[in-house]
Image: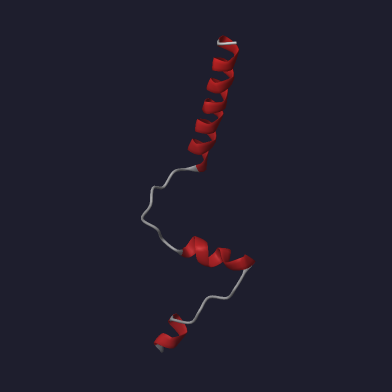
Length: 54
């Protein structure tokens, strides 16, 4: 087998999202559920503080 087949560019699909999700990054990995819960907690805290200090 030749290496040219392994080094061939990936097909463009969904505006390059396939290539984006196949790339490995060394950044912080946080599950989406954690972000959702943290944002809801921040909103609830903001509403509670607004109600208490009116």
